[in-house]
Image 1 (cartoon, helix red, strand yellow):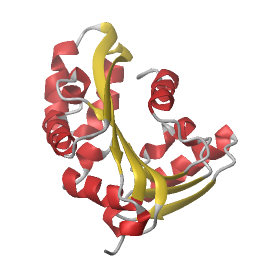
Image 2 (cartoon, rainbow, N blue to C red; image 1 turned 180 degrees about the horizontal axis):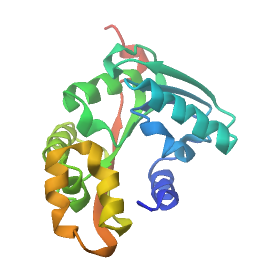
Image 3 (cartoon, rainbow, N blue to C red; image 1 turned 60 degrees about the vertical axis):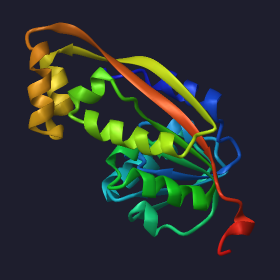
Image 4 (cartoon, helix red, strand yellow; image 1 turned 90 degrees about the vertical axis):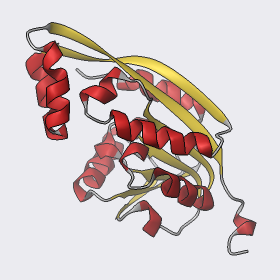
Length: 208
C-alpha cells in the first residue's frame, strides 16, 4: 500500500497552495504527487529520468488537470526560465549538491517549496537514504527557510515480501536494514517527512 498520498497532498496544499501558479516541478517522481500540482496554471517538469517525466504527464492527464505541462529531461541547473513556484518532490536528497540546487531554484522562482524525508525517519533508513537526507536538510536549514512543517506518517506493507519488493532497487544497505522486518506482517513503518518554504530572488534582480 505504501503511504497515504491523498493525506500527503492535503498537507502540502495547506502549507503552500499552487492553485493558479506557474510551477517548476523538480524531480517529479513519476507522478505520485501530481494531484498537488493539478490546479497550477502551468507546469514545467524537470527530471533526469525521461520515463519519470512520461509517468508524471500521464498522471496529470488522468487527473484531468487543465494546466499546460512541458517535460524537460535535464538537470535542474540547466533550466534557466522563471516561475512562480519551484517544487522539490522528495528529491532534494538525491541532488549531487542540495545547496547548489536550492540556490539555483531560488534564483528562478518567486518561492521554493521542498518536501522530503526528514532526518531520523525510519523509512529513510529502510531505503538506505538516511545520510543523504541529513545532508539535504543541512543545506536547507543553512538557507533559513521562512516556514517549516514536520509531518509524521507511515508506510504500510502487507508483509516482508511487499516491503522487500518496494526497496529492492535501493541496493544492499536498504536490504540489510529491512532484515529486522523479515517474518512480520501488517507492517507500519514510521515515515517522518517535512516541508520547507523559501523566498526566491525577485526577477528585477536577475543579472545585476
